Structure formats: C-alpha cells, structure tokens
Amino acid sequence: MSHTTATPSRPAARALPLAEQTVLVTGGARGLGAHISRAFLREGAKVVINYLESSEAAAALAAEHPGRALALQADVRDAQAVQDLLREAERHFGGPVTTVINNALPNFSFNGDARPHADALRWQSMSQQFEGSVRAALNTLQAALPGMRQLGFGRIVHIGTNLVQNPVVPYHDYTAAKAALLALTRTLSQDLGPDGITVNMLSGGLLRTTDASAATPEAVFDFIAANTPLRHVTTPDEFADAVLFFASPWARAITGQNLVVDGGLVKN
Image (cartoon, rainbow, N blue to C red; front, side, top):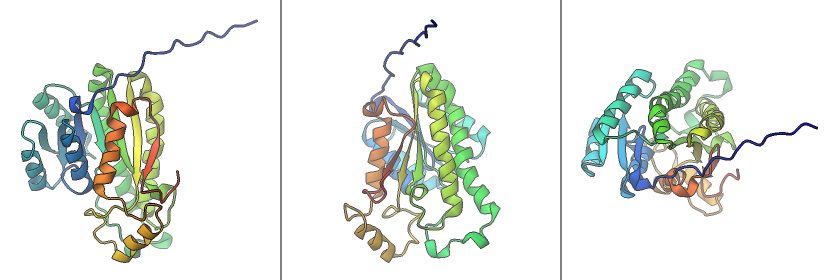
C-alpha cells in the first residue's frame, strides 16, 4: 500500500499594519486613484503617488503629507520606467514597496451612448486597454516582486469592474481587458502565495463621480441608484475604503478573490 506524504503546512502569512506599509498607487493623483492614495495616507502608510501627466495634482497631494507621500512620474506601460520608479521609491523611503494598487486607467470615458458596438469595434481600442491594464500590472508586479520576496510580505490589488459579471453597457475593450486582469489575478495568487504575497481584485460599478464617469448622464446614475439594494451609487471614498481591506491584516488569509463593491447591484 502506498502512502502519501502530506506537505507540511507553512506558518501563518506575515501581516503588516497599514501604517507600516509602503504603497504604490498607479494613477494615484486624480480620480479614484487620488481617493485611494488619501485613504492609505489617512491610515499612516507611506504612499508613492504615480502619475503620467497630472504633475500638479500629484505634487499638491504629496505636499499635504510631507515625509509620507512621494509623487513620481512613470508610464506604467513602460517596464523600464516602472523599474526606475520602484528604485527611486525604495531609495526615498529606505525600504521596498510592500503594496501595489494597480489603478491606472488608459484614456477612457464612461459614456455608453458614445461607445462603439460590435460592428465598429477596432482592435486598436482593445490593445490600448490591454496595454493599460494587463501589461501595466505585469510591469508593476515584476518591479516590486524582489522587494516583496525579501520581506516575505506583499499585497497586490487590481482594480476591476462589475461589467465582467454584468456587461450591460458595450464597453467591449475596457471589459475584456479587465476580465483578462481578473484571470491574471487568480493565476498570480497561486504562483505568489508561497512567498507571502496576496493578489486580489476589487471591482466597482459606476462611481459617483470621477473624471472617467463625468460624462455619464445623470439619468444613468439615478437608474443605478434605483436598482441597487442600498439605493445609492458607490462613491470613490467608499470604494477606496474597500481597497484598504485587502491590504490590511484582516485580509491576510484572502487571495485570488474578486470583491464587487457596488452597493449590491451585482451579486458575485
């Protein structure tokens, strides 16, 4: 009779309080990203506010938290630029980035009336979204991975969309890219779990209001509110608080998951 040797269990994963984390927020100077940056700063974390073009907004946000916030420009689609950003952040703060929030969004306007349907969809739009979502996430992960492995701790949070579960608006390019990012979230969680690194996704609906949702007609917001159990459209601040959860010690045993944060509109 053969006997199967059980794999010894590892000790509980390391968990750092939010105040001891060094957090990179891509696209962290405006829109949802600024709310996420502020949420971590409110909890005492050190935050790298990444931006592409919003230099004034990034500098102003960093100035609100001297010593704990650093504004750094980088195109997250460029692997070398991201490597340089991580090195500068580590030099500035004296230690590795522990937490990566992949929030940066390629140019996109959430206006369903202006989106191309299947017959007008072009691969250029698809490629733009995959570059900004999937390639960018791969770049930040690979740049941060050595430091996370050194610490035996890492938190990676991807920002997704509830349209993957409920594609009611023809944002084909955006939704397909986020679906690919969700698959990457799951495969990375399996690969990196032994290193003490968790990988999760938070998927929102339409937020009231960010730069990206500014073009959304008011009637759409009202319709969503009427069909949400909480009768309320999620705000960027509410969504940012949920991001904190996945980075916090309370989520230390959670990885590979997708949490939909939209007031219950979509049941995941």
